[in-house]
Length: 69
Image (cartoon, rainbow, N blue to C red):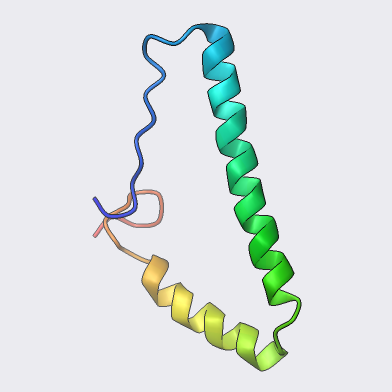
């Protein structure tokens, strides 16, 4: 299953699971913010090109979060 990450919270205390979950959220937010910052420098035409390129890549790659293959 391409692109799928399984996070197992078994065996963690409630506090440790909370910290792990919040850390994963912060990491995702940092990635999104970096992409937004980089996209601010792109022309509208370039952003449309990237959107078209990524649109096809993200569909039906076997990850059930965005369409099982």
